[in-house]
Image 1 (cartoon, rainbow, N blue to C red):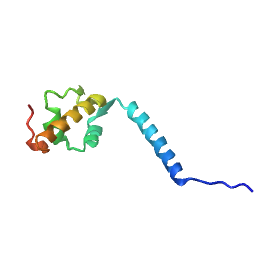
Image 2 (cartoon, one colour):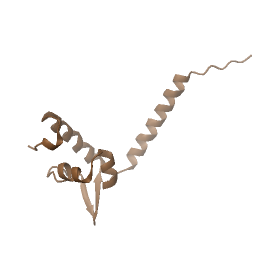
Image 3 (tube, rainbow, N blue to C red):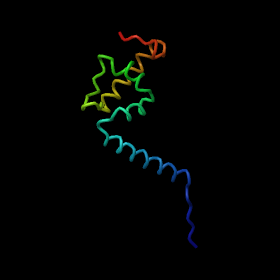
Image 4 (cartoon, helix red, strand yellow):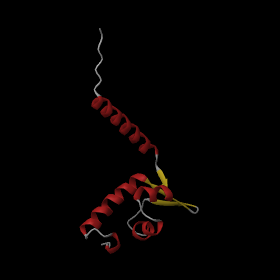
Length: 100
């Protein structure tokens, strides 16, 4: 008689690992993001993004294509990491944040 034992936790772990690898591959395929994708990515409205990020002279992750904005995902990630730390270190309120 043959018995097969299935380790449910191991199967779930393997599935999670496979999904994470696939997501990493998808993330690498997106180089430019349009404004709609960026707003979803940063979870902000266009007005807030424009006021607090896009108009910052240190923000260099955007280029224009006619009326359309394109954002370099890697540069955006780098800027957002620095921006988050700067805002957090000044009290954590983006609206009260002053650039130094």
